[in-house]
Length: 107
Length: 215
Image (cartoon, rainbow over all chains, first blue to last red; front, side, top):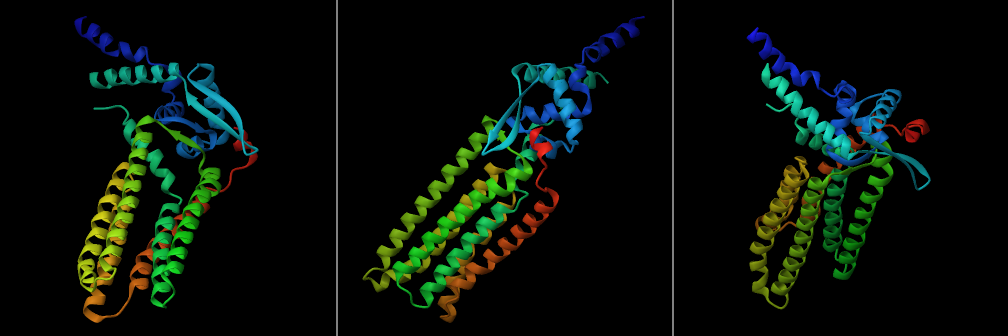
């Protein structure tokens, strides 16, 4: 009974893991965006090696969660899709890292 | 144990901007400009002419580098603005470069003063110029390599440092003036590395279609 309680305590952070960030492709995107101020769609595509469709769909999910801000602009008549991690996204990623750390440390 | 090494992710992203070989071509071209200037000096053109050619060509090399980054690298690799820590490191790199250029001007002025109307000054210059050149090159390139996380710059620091002492030593012992070759050899080596990297970059990163630009 006591052992079961310890296991439950250890695994509690696992249940609280942010599923939006936890998906591997989105995790890679959030980690990359967390180390830069902003980047465009092409840069992220090259860094993560995701396809255009994949990247676009994951970014939409991150935008819907309020983690990523997507801004479309024109630079010398060429379209540029600029992406930035919001403060909410940055905090969520920090929290995710802490929880994952706790989970991995407990193993 | 850390779950993510964000420093490494940032470094990897920043280093990826050096895959285009433009820095190698830029630095190699600067050495080739020095080689051309030395060649003009050897064939007896006026000091004004070879200094003028040196300045004009250096400006052209800097412009070509800037345009290359804007027209070749960004359209293929994408646009990125790095965070405050990286910006701080780049500011430090620029300050080091500025100090290096200022130091170069001071050394040049001292060297000119040593030679002018003083035959003994030339022998002092033979020791002073190569030492100043080597120290400046090694220190500046090492700092740049460190702050920019660009390891090839350590090697380029050595390649930049070598031509002047090599040239002075050859002139001392053989009385041959090989300045143009002394600058050209490392310059061509850097240019070759840069060209290979640039070709690989153009192959690996073709210009994206409209749908990618639209996101």
